[in-house]
Length: 377
Image 1 (cartoon, one colour):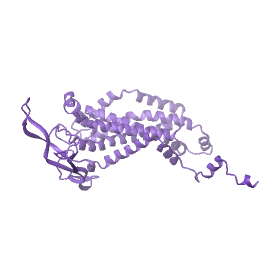
Image 2: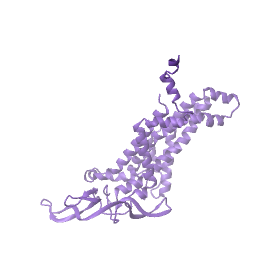
Image 3: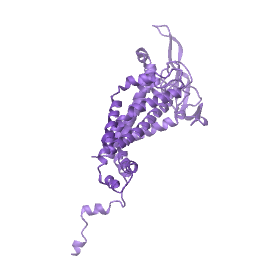
Image 4: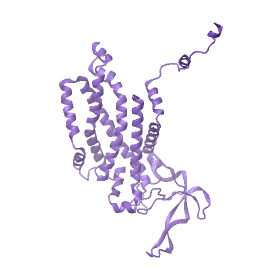
């Protein structure tokens, strides 16, 4: 008996005894599942970096996006070596200059790195002045030349403006449009979907017929037709607001259809019927009982809808229907790529495409990770 009493407990009892005390919250469960997905974590990190870059775009941009230099200048490569190949620090870039030697075929001066005038690079350097958040005057930049000379890590456009700085500043407009459109679409689509699915009957039938009419519109011709109604001389804020309204008006229907399907299933659950039995108002049932249970689906749908809006804004901007100068967006920058000969000669002007691809991958990866974390089955 003594030997039996001193025997170790079975494995399942030991696991129960070592379990953490207290109930784990739903958010903690979602976060624990999300951490198991390396693509979801990577998407979360990239989304965070993109948002930080957009908020502090003036700080991360190495140059003034409106300053002009040599047109279509190629990217300057950061180097840790001098003319003789010796290792040097801090890193530097060499501007391109014309040498005294002539090309034997074209008899034009040979263009090459100017090793006699290196531009040293550093962190938190002084450069073009700007206003942080539009209020605080500042002149420090995250990375750039120590002496304030222009550096072009991704080259320049046809007007000699730095492509990297314009792409970083353009992220602010592109992400603002995407987040604003998705916020409006989510508010309208979620409300209409829950109300339609909850009340059902004739009301639901008429609402769904209207949703089908909105979904049946050919969106691209309608975008072009509506945005062309704004005169070219209209203020940029008016044009931008109109574009956001048009995108939101055509994008809420799909969200409402998805939320309606979830609401139809939740409206028949016991706790909703119990709330009806005790006399709870329809508003309370919709927003206090049904809305928290569709939020998980809405969050995932939002993260997956943002990339489509970014792509749409880039496409409309490429056609000239999204953002007008002096505002900067990725789509507006891609207008320089309309000529095939320009792309073949100056391929670095396609750099905004890289920012769009990273943004789309980040939000898609985060959305897939959240979808698996919210509903692992």
